[in-house]
Amino acid sequence: MITVLSGGVGAARLLRALRAEARPSELRAVVNVGDDLVLHGLTICPDLDTILYTLAGLNNDQTGWGLAGESWRVMDELEAIGGESWFRLGDRDLATHLYRSQRMADGATKTAVSAELTSALGVDVALLPVTDDPVSTVFETALGRLSFQEYFVRHHHEVAVSRVEVLGAASARATPSALSAIDDARRVVLAPSNPIISIDPILQIPGVRDAVRRRRDDVVAVSPIVGGAALKGPADRLLFELGHDVSCVGVADFYGDIVGTWVIDEVDAGHERALRQRGYEVRVTTTIMGRGANDAALASAVLS
Amino acid sequence: MITVLSGGVGAARLLRALRAEARPSELRAVVNVGDDLVLHGLTICPDLDTILYTLAGLNNDQTGWGLAGESWRVMDELEAIGGESWFRLGDRDLATHLYRSQRMADGATKTAVSAELTSALGVDVALLPVTDDPVSTVFETALGRLSFQEYFVRHHHEVAVSRVEVLGAASARATPSALSAIDDARRVVLAPSNPIISIDPILQIPGVRDAVRRRRDDVVAVSPIVGGAALKGPADRLLFELGHDVSCVGVADFYGDIVGTWVIDEVDAGHERALRQRGYEVRVTTTIMGRGANDAALASAVLS
Image (cartoon, rainbow over all chains, first blue to last red; front, side, top):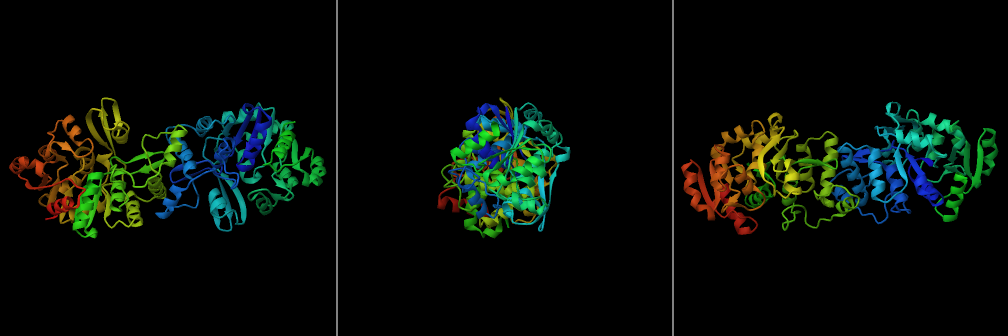
């Protein structure tokens, strides 16, 4: 089994690349829920849904979020009557949120609902929320404290951050399925997701970081920083604002002793020595996904 | 001021007819909330919304529910992933439910949200939920206890009912605006809505029946039973199953001493004497709404 600690887009693409090289039934994702939110009464899990849609082949590869062929009738009407429409929920996407919200009102866990949704969409990779307890990542910013989606969507992550906190993490319980997915995998992968706001909120759930550390020799991390910049999103900006080096080495130092092998991009080959000096194995390959040959090379570097 | 105790479709049509004859700002509806529900995490108020859409000119007059030009993308997708889709929520309609659910999560009352929605849709009739507290009408049936919408929508009101109960009614508080709308109106109207499941759940909120009784001389009721049958819905069947005469006289006996004047249809002129013997004033006119001349005649009978 291969277990991938996952945020949203970057993880979804890595999982898609790995699925092409491994047996899908071998793959499991342990997914961040720190950016989950309740909006309009609906429970929304952006990272779980991004992976779900990507692996179901429904995602919009142009925008990097949402669904291909999406329509926006509900949001347009909501906007017309003066409702909050800054967090755009497409009509097709809303069906997922209605489904999840109803099932959770029925008493189902997020884990159970994820299994139902992957089954309904024919996705054969298990998507495991790291916890079924409510946690929420919040940002101390120049505009005051912001929720994840206020920071990320409403303000387009264009506001200075002084601190990131995962509310509820200390008392949340990792699910048994997430913990055993780490314990019994032949490889544990840290996806090239945002280290601070996607992967760290997974590691902060009690027991998870220790579980990953115990597997250190089999832990492979793919750097989300390539040539000093994030491919997508505010990982570079957040690393800088929170005092980390904006490089694969900075990310390695941020994760510390839980990683055995770093997979870095060819443009970062100059960092290989610094990583080896810190005791990591290093594989250098292309890490820019989206083209078949690149995806296969990256998957091979992660799995070999 | 004219205050109309209101269920859904029949009340919406009466309000539309009255608005054409009175000043809209004179009109207020005190609306049943016993069939409100939470579904998919969304707070849905079918009677309030039916009136809202009808008065905004957005309703579907063909089906008698929902919106003209409605689309069904979300429901179709929800059905495709195996979600509960027996209660059909159109895309445009969903915007209303998202709006209300978000505002109520923000702490707004149902009354406040109704005012916001009427304002957003340009409706100048005040729609006043009888209470902001949760109440729910349930049915003891041959299939066991059913919620309102399970009875009404899921089973198409085609199951025998032995008892109707409004859970929460005894401890609910009528809103001050609903009570004062009854106290200070020059006319209080009982809409031709279902007596048992639309009007009675309003009267059961403590203080409401007494408030209406105090205005008895100014209370005009429009019979929902015409020629021994309901124009729409299960009023006739429910009256029969619960032991009432299926006629305007049976409805009059059900309401008892809170009505001063009955407005009955021409086909029921033969019941005039029985109603007068019970001490009611009676006006005989056409009560079938939907054509301009009929609407004007009915409005005139109610207002004169």
